[in-house]
Image (cartoon, rainbow, N blue to C red; front, side, top):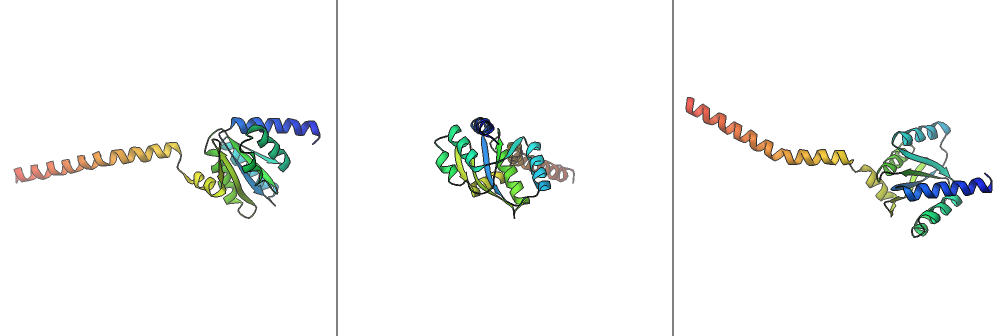
Amino acid sequence: MNRSEKKAFVESLSSSLSESQSFVVVRHSGINSESMSNLRKVARSNDVAFSVVKNSLLKLSVKNSMSSLAPDITDHVRGGIGVFVSSDALSASRVAHQCAKENKDNMSVVIGVVEGEVLDAGRVSYLATLPSLDEMRSILLRTMLAQPTRLVRVLKKYGETKDEQQTG
């Protein structure tokens, strides 16, 4: 990669990072090409972009796109680095967590940024295990409907016993 290509890549990555809602940095080593292809396929299917990035280029991109967070992020950039970038707040963490779990010997989550907040690996993993918005809505709806349903069942049973007493 020559200097002009590096400059274009940094500009592209900087704009991707600044426009995204979240990104997760992972450290990888020893991943074979088949696993890397599967990882990219999983990322694409979840509308997440994945790139293997040189450390210096990632540091420059973070510095250009979010200079206030740069020290918190660049301190963790060592070794083979990949970046999951998403326009959704949770997708990048979910995909990174899933891929790190599948390749646990060769990949680990290093750090993440969600809506401008820097998260350590533990918080990224916790975020990845949260239910989706649709799942949360269904849980809330089930909870809200559970009590009225129970009340209707009790009233129905009470009405049936009342009818049996009157006819018997």
